[in-house]
Length: 74
Image (cartoon, rainbow, N blue to C red; front, side, top):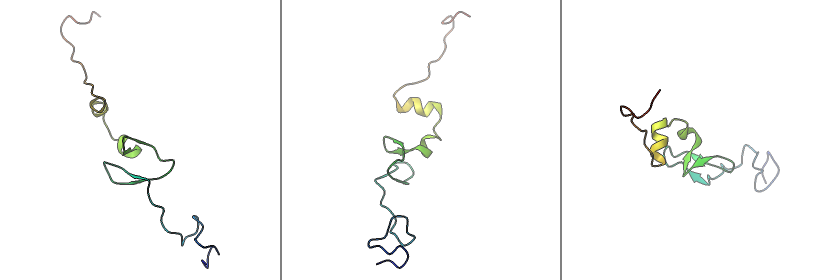
């Protein structure tokens, strides 16, 4: 029995409780992802926030289009 929380096994909020095991690891940075964390295809929210617009488009198989002369009338 734990001397702090008086439970066995320890209450998850007890300082003596073992670290929870991650349900998933970020494919980019390796950080542990736990219940309630958000990700896209195994990439954590923090890593995704660093992606540029071009990188997001590439992830979805898209490219920026190049404007050609005479294409748009303003």
